[in-house]
Amino acid sequence: MNYQPFTKLLQPRGLFGSSDSNFTCSRPKPDEHGDLLSIGITFKSLMTYITTAALGLTTISALFLIWKHLHRYTTPKEQRQNVRIIAMPVFFSIISLLSIMFYVDSIYFKPLIDVYESFCVAALFLLYVEYVCPEEEMRPKYFNDLENKDKKGNIIPGGSLKWFNRTWITVLQFPLTKTLSCIVEISTQAAGVFCANSLSPRYAHIWLLLIDMFIIGGAVSAVIKFYIRLKKEINPKHHPLAKLLAFKGVVFFQFFQEIIFGFLNGKIFQPSRTMTYDDIYYGIPMMLTALEAMLFSFAFHFAFRSREYHAENRPDAHRLSTWRAILDALNLSDIVHSVILAFHLFLTKNSPNGFNNPAPRRQRTSELDDMSREPLTDSRWPESATPVPETHGHMAVGAQQYGIVRGYGNEREELSTGYGYDKYRAGYLGIDGTNSRDPSPSRLAQKPRDMV
Image: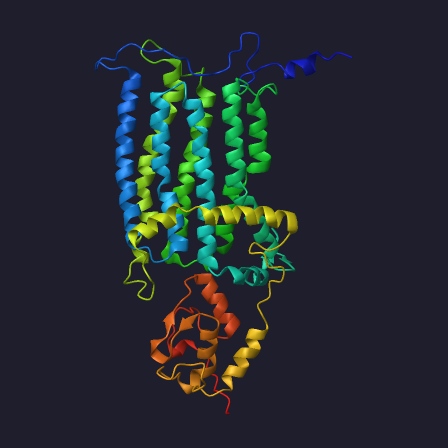
């Protein structure tokens, strides 16, 4: 049998099937400098200056927006995710500048961009989950009651809890698996067995590429599908689409850029007297990354605005001090916990918060009924409290029992902030109204209180 066709497949090749005998793995060349430009500096120096300026503007833009969030830190579970994503362009710009200044080490810097991106993907997903259903113990019930349909529009029995579990696994495995992939890439680069311009199985590039495509990948698309399905449940004031487009824009340009420079490298872009191979293959893409990061850092001021967290919009919220807000945003324990839950969910098939039974505790319903038959002067209520209007007693007490409002009569105040979650709670308690945020009596079901 002739094995020649098969052995040719295993020979080193370029990205486009170019041949092998003279094949050279693409790596930075130390101590290679181009001639001076007409302005008296090298092309590498020019890129360094441009990238440094872009980094400065990006940092100023991002820090200003981050400071506004920290100064209005009234909703930590949401704002910590905002701060992490807002800082992403700064991180990209720092890595870009280091990669241009040190070409030889750029192969170790660049994978770090993908790691930070994976944490931001998880942050965006957790942010959307907070918008939909902020209270963790209610999520199994919420998604179990959420209607599930196939691609043809047919209703799938059993609700959407399994779909939410799969989405949780797909997104939250990303930070850990991408970090491990980054460690492998850096290690194989150092060992000389990673070749970015080869798809030969003798190099680690093809294997990491396949793992990324079929095992790690899919997290970004899972976040997009989650948003598309639940966008009507997210309050428009959060600008969820703008957040998705701004974040996806950064990711898209990175992906598109790698394809373009990989495809055109050696085809159109050729080294010249003033522009070296390293300038073309390593310098220009990272300079463009810094410029793109700068533009998107400006766009983040609209997508991740802090105005909705201002004290005048959330009069009942408690604002953390700036230093405590900084520590809270830097604390990654929530993402680490979510990653652990993702793998726990994958192994045990439980719901994301560890509950096997998605139904709410039934004894609370009986407690609600009992309380509706008791006088409001019961010892469990403070004597100084303003009485709940008798015509709305049942539902007002029920709303308080379930944590939607706190207080009595006209002094009731809102606790929950999830838009879809509020609508779900409203239907669950029987509150008449499309928006359970409004605690006014007109939003409460007109059910007379039972006589004692």
